[in-house]
Image (cartoon, rainbow over all chains, first blue to last red; front, side, top):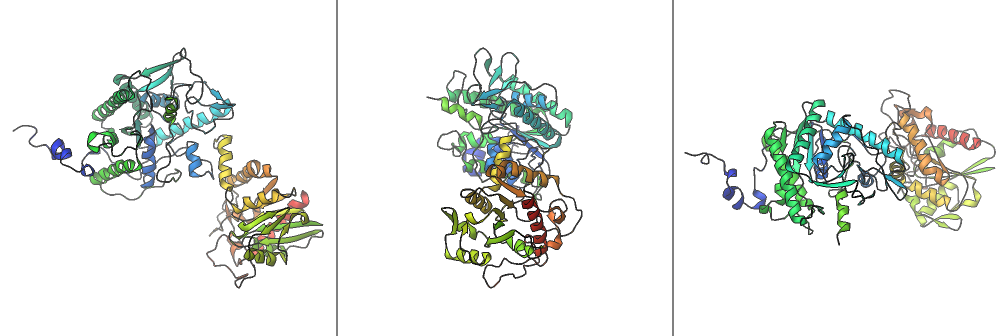
Length: 349
Length: 234
């Protein structure tokens, strides 16, 4: 008698993967806790997280939106202005350190820096450079909307029952002097790059882990029952500043992020990990769900990921009634993603 | 003599009937150019005259205007574009939006509407004042209050600032006395509302009871009184 004799078939590669049609691979996710359609769910993170919120909304789940578009704004315009992309207009949070930074700002542990980027007579928020198509009219408007978003983000922390965070990158750009992080390298989207002021850091496992753990701890201080659902973006890096080949850099990043997410889910009963990363990018799926650029995810892939999500929940917890409609703009099935990282492609020669 | 030209869709019926109930003002004449649905989409510019692009529309506007088959902008002093898919707007002035976001939102709100097409058509060939009336707020089933939502008032103000003022036009709010429950029309004003007369068999037919968007001549009377006060004050 040994421990392998009583394991289910899903524990064995041959039965669970090799002998299965790729679309019949089952049991990838055994949810730790239920996500009911009435539970307010906040979503933040990297570009891939945008799919999760929209899918939740479409399926009748309560996708928490704390910053709604102005009346009359069409869905397409709303997305361009960062409404209905995440639960508040924070823009992409690619790293766990960016999440921690936003949490600390929103909860008043740290002050938002006054840095401002200017371009073409318009003002840009360095921490949300792509939040409006043409920036803001002036510094005051940047600050006013920033403060509004911080309050909205705080309400997301306080008011959600499940906080979905999609980890995207380990590569980050820091202000050397004051040690705060930008979501994108200054000078790429707006602003001016200075090697004296700006530092590249490719974060280690421990740094990624500690930042996420601390962000979650801070959030649970104000919302003790908050649960977290972590995912890792399967989307490879647009570009790397690590000096390595982008394929190598991507593997490093995703490996670190996947390890952190998995370890935190193992450690805490209030954290779960959903394997969207494995579904899209692991070898058995043979890259089926990537577009021709082998980077962006085909809508069919998003659909497969999310249908796996919902079916795993229903299998474990049963079907449930439709929930409250969120305030998210109604979008067509495959709207363009809002992704500052994409701009790095323009610098490739 | 102030020559008023009123252009719009089926909602014009209430104004047409309403003006008959208003005590005649000396020195003001009215001409209505109206057609149901989106028929007025087929108005086109010819010099300083706006003409129908098809026979069916020509018949409708001839009927409503008392025989005119074109809008000769040299012959009118004031314009009112009424209904024509212009929707009321609601703005929470406590919420924080950038100026660009509000401009985009209000632009989205009016873009593609027949009302905006008509306003631009007029503005391309006349400098006379243009007033705008949105289609009526939906009728309430039950009256709970006579309050008017601040969001409606602020919404109209914002539309004027960002959309209509640049076109030298002005949106008029629905008269306060007709509004209930913040942003609905008193149900009495939808009773016995009638179909716009355009020379068809069902002209002036009483609309079904469940039509809560078309208003009756009593509503039109109040609206026109407000409009007349507005143009007399201008």
